[in-house]
Image (cartoon, rainbow, N blue to C red; front, side, top):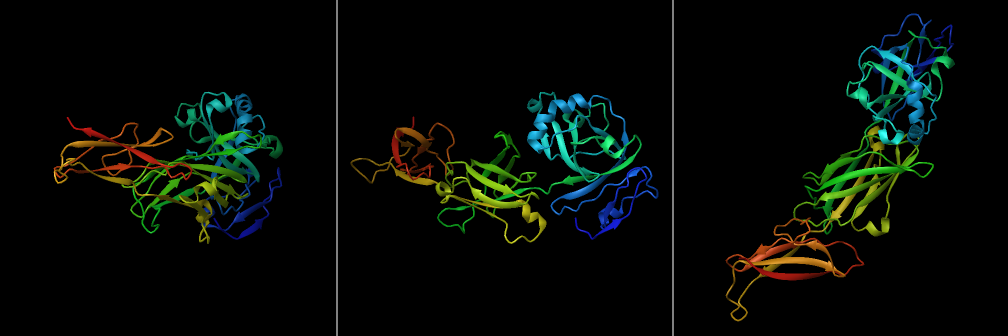
Length: 398
């Protein structure tokens, strides 16, 4: 959201807070009170990278149990946000129900609670804060209605800003633009040939300052007729390095499996922009994978996207013929063949009777037709250090 800022000398007798207003259509729809004796004005901070919205409500009394709740999750919260919480929450009754879009999720097992906690970043009185809402509330089983939100931070808002029940507040909610991974699947021999129908599963994790690994976001993608699959991975993370693991779940018909997971390492700057992207094992994967950030950046959303190109080989096809050992012109029908691919006597691939990868532990049988012909298909792992060989097993259909 862009706008030209101007300083407005909005001063409360209680607070003497100076606010900054943005000239933007988004803010024009909100009604500001003519008197601000009891109005706490939030400074609107322009953040290009985020889609901002304003929540308006009034401070209300809580139930007196927040201290216990916050103390339970403070360590897990710190791991996610690097913020040390004040043991309490500020309760605000909004003008209408609010469906929280989480920046983070704190799992119940991470803090010893009964329910997962959704966390969304916000700004109140130029102070970074978070809206928290438990899974219980999301299921409408909570004592709080959906129009009541709880805000946590590293300060006591009531004490620092002399807030009282009934005071009006405006909260700026920071919604991250969606992070997207554009996966292009192409033929390894001819990259102008695009491959459709390949499905992927993407997971991610990052490491905290105390070397704890934290699961981040997950997504899926399947390539279309242009060979492009888009993984929608929710959010980015400020000043962090996140490793995204691409797992090929099902290769396209007519193509072999990649044979390995692909780790993509993305570095985010202080704004959550993609500043760098690289393969974790660049030398070992350079023949089948490449990555890049969006350049040039044509719009703000491009700061939250990366491109990945994955290259698959066509499936290995065996054309098989069964014929009489004496009279080679006599072809034999209904002879079945299985192919098992090995290295060091270890099976790593089983044949398929159709031109797609057999992902089971049992080889499929291909039977010869009236002309004595059949085909069997095999996936080979693309690792240079192994020398592949195939054992062909003849089998008669009964």
